[in-house]
Length: 363
Image 1: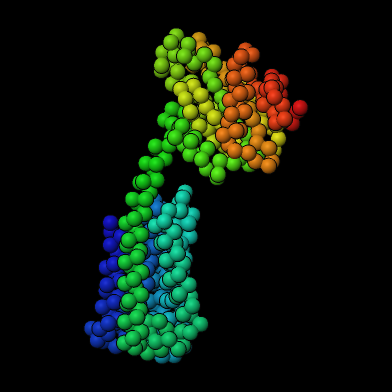
Image 2 (image 1 turned 90 degrees about the vertical axis):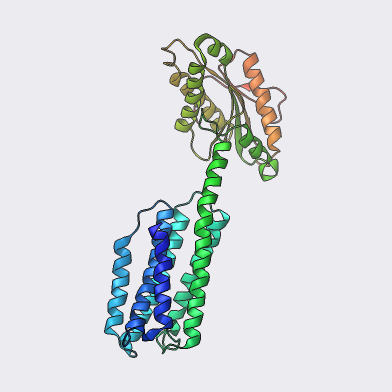
C-alpha cells in the first residue's frame, strides 16, 4: 500500500512546487518539483513491480533520481547544463515508463484488458517524453528547457493527472482480473490429474471453428478401473489418477493438453508430424503409466492403459470427427484384450493395432 500511495503523494508535491514556484527562493521550487516528479514516476514503476510479485528496484530508482537532481543543482536558469539536466530528466522518466512496460509484458501469463490498457498507456507516455527530447531547447518547462509558461505547467499537470487516474484504475482492475482468471483456471482444472476437466474439453472442441490442424488425439482408458476401486479402495484409485497426470507431465511436452473427461477416461492432444511419432508417443505413455503405478497399493495393483489414437490429416477436419475416430479405436483396443494402442488411419474402415514394441521413428 505504501508503494501504491507513493506516486500520488510525490506527484502532488511536484505539482504544488511547479504551480507555486515562489514557495522556495530562487530555482529551488522548480528543482525540487522536477525531483519529486521523477520520484513519482519511479515509484509508479516500483508499485507496478510489487503488484506483479517482483522485488522493487530501489537502488536503481534512487541512483537515477539523485543523478537528475545533481544535474539540476549544477544548472542555472539557462545554459548548456540546464539543457543537459532537462534532457536527462525527460530520458529518465521515459525509461521508467519503458521499464514498467517491459516488466508488465514479461511477468504475466495472459494479457487481460486492463493489462493491455496499462501497457498502451505506459508506451504512449514513454514515447511522449522521448519525443520531447529533440525539442528540449524550444519547449517551456516542465516540457523542456525554455522558461516556464502558465500553459505549459497547466498542460503538464493535466497530463500527469490523466496518467495517474488511468494508472490507478488499471492497478485496481488488474488484481481483480487476475483473481477472476485464477478462478476460471480452477473451474477448468481437474484436481486429481492436474489436467483440464470435461468443461475445458468441451471448450477445446468448440474452439477455432472446431477444426483441427496437425493434431494427434489419444483416447485413454484405465483398464478395469472400477474393479481396482472396489478391490483396493478409492484412495488407491485417486493415486492412479494422479499418476496419470504425473506421467503425462513427465513424458509429454507443451503444448500437449491432458483432459480428464470421465472417472477413468482421458483425452491427450498434442502436435506431431506423422502416425509413427503419434504411435511411439502413445506407447511411451502406456509403458510409463504401467511402470509408475507398479508400486501403488504395495505392489498389489496392476494398472494398464487402453489407447485409441487418431491423427488429423494436413487438410484439417472437425475436432468432433477426430474424437469419434479415436473413440472407435479405443473401443477396438478394449475389445481385443486391452493394454494396447490401436490406431484408426484415414481411408481405412477398421482400426489398426500398433506394434507393442513400437518406438519413435520405426514403422
